Every structure is written in C-alpha cells, then in structure tokens.
Amino acid sequence: MTDLDADTLCVYAHMLKRSGVPVSAASLATSDEAREALKVIPDPELGINIVDLGLVYDVDVASDGRVHVTYTLTTFGCAIGPMLEGQMQEVLYSLPGVSDVSVEFTLEPKWSRDRMSDDARAIVGNRELHPPSVQDLRTIGGP
Image 1 (tube, helix red, strand yellow):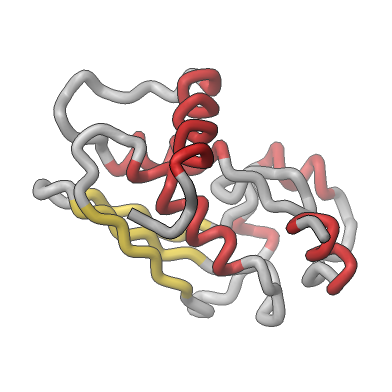
Image 2: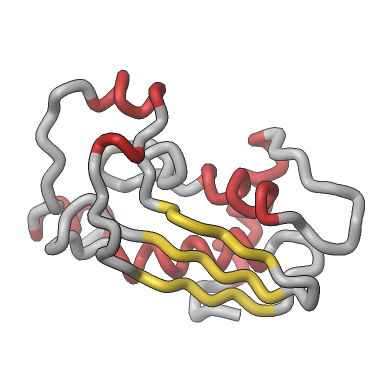
C-alpha cells in the first residue's frame, strides 16, 4: 500500500462507486476497468481526468493481480508527478484482486494534444498547457 492514509482510499473507493465505472464480478479487475477507474483522478490544474488528458499511456493487469501503469505529464517540468502516482496507486489498490501496483513515469513518446480525448480538447481549447507555479502547488496542497 502507499503512504496515503485510509481516509484517502475511502474517498477514491466512493468516487469509483459514484462514477458508475463498471467493475466485473470476477475476482480481478481488467486492464480496461483499471484504466476507467483512473478517470476519477483529475489533473489539479485543468480539472480534466488524467486518462482523457492522455497522460496514461498503458495499464497492464497481470493474472496475479499486479498492475503496471505507464504515464507521462504534459510538460517536462511539471511537479505533480509524485502526487498523481500516489493517487493512481490508491485508486488501483481499491479494485478487486489487485495485489501490487507499480507506476512508471516516461517521457517517450512525448505528450501532445493528440493524446487527449475529444472532450478534453474541447474543454482545453487553445489554452497553453504549462507546469503549475509554486503558488499553484501551494493552493493545491494547502499551506
């Protein structure tokens, strides 16, 4: 399990239930279900979920319950990677049959707007995407 507290896990489990993400009755979630579950995690700056934003490149669920996620960030200098990794772990550990979660950051291939869903592109429009400022991070994380 990650360093995040049990209350956070409960919040994510509740978000998954409310989101209507279909999770099979089988004892192990599928890769598609795991990817759908990650949609409860918003990018803190844009408010768009990390899957529709195109940050999640791959989700693999092995038959023994190990889940591996490969993800990227919109810009090289974005400081939210560790926060997103913790959130991804919490969400995925709440799925049935998940025994281990590993999250891998990559810069290849480089993220581009082409990776975004049509809905995410419509929300973002032509806005420039940039890393959050120190003030933005303080606002997100609190004082």
